[in-house]
Image (cartoon, rainbow, N blue to C red; front, side, top):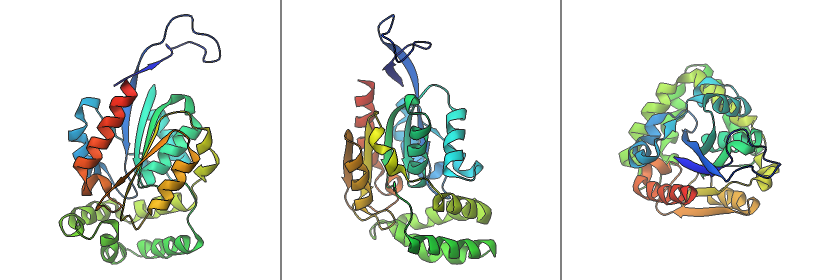
Length: 254
């Protein structure tokens, strides 16, 4: 992908000495909690012309700021970040740390604010059970909440497989990272890059009002609500999500 921007070495605070030039830009896909490239399989195929890369910073670092910093180290140049759920939190934090390097943000089923006290308590209780090796006991009964009821029967098994594969320690680290995440609402109004916000109409984990809140804070943000869809947008409605992302990416290139 290419993005019209200043040539390397040009001072952004001074008039350019030559016209804007083409700068290489990477499309990075950021998985959600306990997720990996499996949740992006349809996008890796459907958006292949943009050569997307799935980041694994969620599996390597212990906090949202550390994940964002590692992402920025891993990938040079301008970035278009597409983050789902916790991946959206990482994307927003990367935009706070290095706004000059973000050419666009696509935020799928994510949340800019802190967890409520009740949600934090639920996560802490789950962490205790994960530490006791009771991962399946916690995850399996709750898998259906990630999906629209129409989509759960076909997809819940695949989702359960990659969450269980993440293992107890990764689940503990990532839940603690989410609990302690920065409040992104403080910096969202300063974003200058294009922002796309996508939410399932039946998302029970990050309800539509959380996406609407992000859009209310970012003047240039666009909201797309996907019908008959829960939290796992990329798996539940891949053709719709791919079409929305492709249209948005083409707009960035233009």
